Length: 288
Image (cartoon, rainbow, N blue to C red):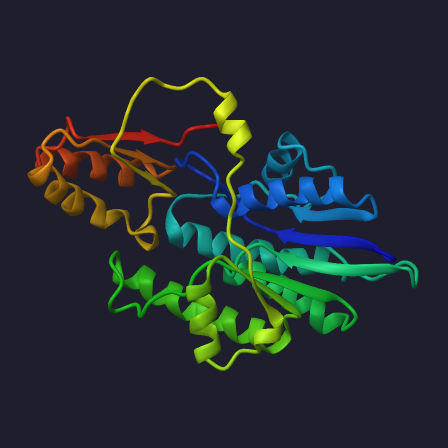
């Protein structure tokens, strides 16, 4: 790589109340950035983040310059997340400068780790303020129509149209778009997106890391791994596993992933209602 590359990440997200674990996009970002640094010493990172986000990335070994956005805000639930994050995003435009190259030998990249509206808006604003910036955008999935999606309708409605706003901005100004799978690529191409901007780069697993660790001694016939919210499809798990158990009565399922207290309590209650306590174990968030 001829030019030095400085990658900016803007994450103005408040701290969650009653939620354990981290989202997959955060874990992916931390692991990728650590490996990038090992591959090329000319890469450096600047994180414009809240203090708890900075602590997470520092704890996970991401060497960067951390610009802290002061805040004492915390959130509980999607509405709390939405309005508090909006406040922080607006505040961040007054606190952080638009990234610019210090020399002709330096390349500036703005990396948005998800298509959440509050991550897209700063990247879009930086691109508008400095056209020489290269905006790299991650899109994890395309929300289905809010009327067909399981979960609370008001949340589905807001999520659907906020993502549509994000996709509009990404389509107009992003330079590179990284997707998790080819299904999302096919959907975007149907919508008229430029295939030359799109790259499919699925999540990976560090087999050496997990093989070296001690096993729990428990055996399961199935594992669900992901954050417990409607867009992950976990609401379908219980009826599906009940059908499995009708064919294989001793079949066991492990559910692994962070969740809010109410979501976790409701899930456990539904398992009891269906008489599947011996077949399904809710393990919550598990550290590496």
